[in-house]
Amino acid sequence: MLMNLSDFLLELLRQPGVSGAEIQTRDFLVPWWQPLADELLVSPIGTLTAWRRGTAPPPRQRILFAAHLDTIGMMVSQVEGEFLHMAPIGGLDPRVLPGQPVTVWAKEAPLPGLLVAPPDRLLPPENRGKPVPLSHLLIDLGLTARQVARRVRIGDRVTFAQPPQMFGQETIVGPGLDNRASIAALTLALEALQGRTHTWDAYFAATVQEEENLGGAKTIAYELRPHVAVAVDVSFATGPGVGEDKGVPLGEGVLLGFGPNIHPKVHQAMKAVADRLEIPYTIDYLPTHSGTDAMALQIAAAGAATMVLSIPLRYMHTPVEMVSLKDIRRAGRLLAEFVVALDEQDETWPSWEDEA
Image 1 (tube, one colour):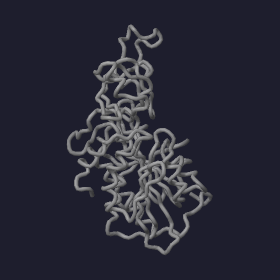
Image 2 (image 1 turned 135 degrees about the vertical axis):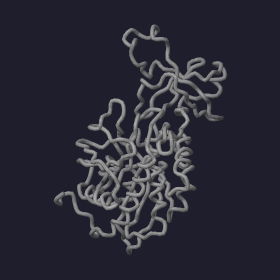
Image 3 (image 1 turned 180 degrees about the horizontal axis):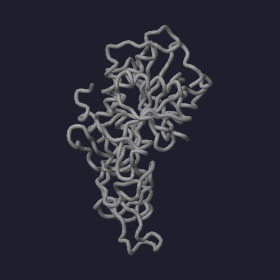
């Protein structure tokens, strides 16, 4: 396990990395993954992949684990005097935005700012008494119009500045846990595989641009052509408005996806490993698409046998996302043991047509 999972994740959450601007976060991850991999790969669009070679003679079977590195955020779309207009990157909930501290990643230096809304009575009649739409929100930097014009450019990225923090010993809160929690799980899995052998080649990818176009998953799966591909992401934990029919309590285990985006044999195999390890899990029924990198992994090139492993997360796509460290550890352990368990599989993974 990591020397200190909470310290690692708190520092990871402090790195900016909205879709299309993940370089600083990727660079933070490199020294952590370098000693845990036989080789690190960086794709042309920025996906970082740790490659652990298998022991079977080549050509070897290949498994790819993908967790997206990017987060939701904003982009400066217009400078109007002292204030900035912005456009969303990824899905934003306008109800939680007014009053949020943000950071504008200007070229010379990051600038602190505040998301502000006009008084309700000054909004158009159709918007009064309702959540203020993003088009009416502004960023106030506390600078003069001349200072703003000199320092800020259209296209500068904007991230939430809410600091991550621990609630007790096992609960972490902050922006970007979707999907930095899964990046931590991949890192734990890489650590757990140290000193162990496995016949398959195992690739662990921190993908880019998931929140906008699944670009990192599409391209890395096309390049590597994995036989099995597992998207590691977050899913809804129980909380306000999310009952146990729609979510899983924090700290009570991971979610195993099942549906048309999931290969039934891979689902069964991961479920068997979780049962053997006594890792608690809930079946996550996904009757349409999974909303994860698995949508791209499944259909890249000739396609791959795909699975989704999720970590419960509360308050998704807000500045105060919440995750249990217990569930991150469980996910990391399950991924590592799944790699080793692949040695018991047939040389070729069963086709989709085989009985589930």
